[in-house]
Image (cartoon, rainbow, N blue to C red; front, side):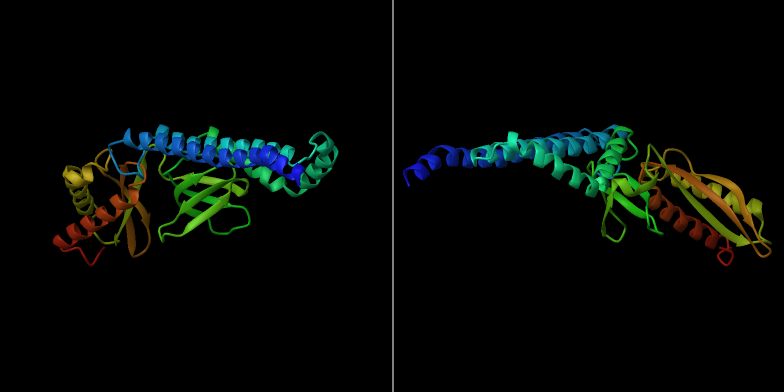
Length: 276
């Protein structure tokens, strides 16, 4: 009884202090991470949270990865100290740990693959927090597409247009299409009858692009005036004329929808609505 009380006053108290210290350490690390990400957001004033500079997106991802690594290392060291206080001889655990590590290693190859892939994703800046990406995943016929909400060394978390959260292990990523790297492009195909006057259609589309670039709301999303690329596709009874616009990253969908509305209205005013 006396020995138990003595252990509680020494080793037991130390274990409690280590556990409390680990909890406080985790809170402090997360607090620092949140302050850093808030400062990154505050330093980018020109648009909403989706449209960030490339450097800001990379710093977001890097802050999350560093936090994950620091917390994992800290908790591991605390666990070792707790084992010591419980009477485990860590030196005697080397041989069993080697055998256990080898066994786990065979089963954890996928985890190691995920970690290595995540490391290269972060260092190569393939995408970052807030990017709109399309990811081809091993064994999946349909790619995962959405806005990047979280990036760690092991997984990438996306949220698609329906609000669904998609978690992709980094080691299963085959191909990444970044739809919001530096700038994006909205492409609008206007279908018209093969007998329509192409020159007249081009004039209408040029006018729509010029007026869109003069619009205060749209101009803040556009990098330059929308242009008409010309005839894109031709069939027996229909042809497609393509119009493109360079936009801020992540804004190509919003700009594309607005331009389609303006094109449809312009064609209707010219009495060509039956051709669109």
